[in-house]
Length: 284
Image (cartoon, rainbow, N blue to C red; front, side, top):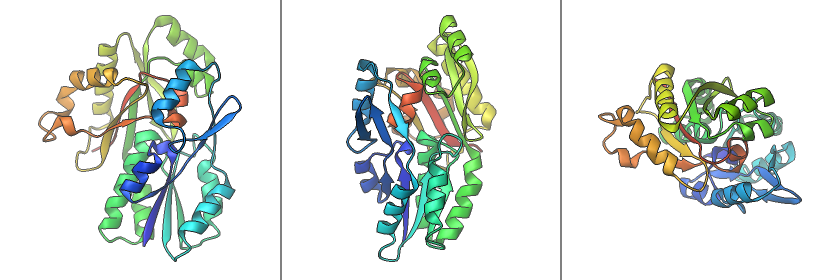
């Protein structure tokens, strides 16, 4: 049997992982002196409540080699193979730790760098489940994932750059300029790292820019997994984006109301803050 193990940077919570038939290893999130496990004892909704209310900026910790080793030992105990899908190596040392731990299980445990995060990581997991269901062996699944991950596009509009600045993901100068101009920054995961790819004043213009960047990226391959994501305690910005981007979906999917939508969790939410909206897909 081939088992999928994914970290919580994918925004897959523990209960959801159980429903999907996969295993999830949580990233640690610290608020002040208290530590939580993302998606286990800290829900996405509670995280954003704390982010807004707390004076403490949350800090996340990579999953170390010891914790990966513990998970691999448990999951391989009955002879199963494991494919571990991780947060981009460009954003965290989590992949390197998983890779090192996997070396103790040659031919049995495989670590895959998603080169992505949040819904971009999730759709790679969804694709892995498809491949396993099709009958491919573990090595073939890993090879396909490493090829197709290069086609994943994640593009998002964020409300402010201040959280990316606090988390060290973008320079203070760029963040300050964005805040002074009251722009809506558009970011993407490019080469496994977060990049600022555009900016617009107002939600409609930023949504239009987001739509243009989706097309510029190559357009959405609707035969592959895809999804929308949002951050915060309200999905109002998401609903506005869906209205502004109707042309992306009309005539391409049967029911736009069934577009997969996911709430971003604490690992990525720490860096983008509330009121973000994004899309993740495999480009054509």
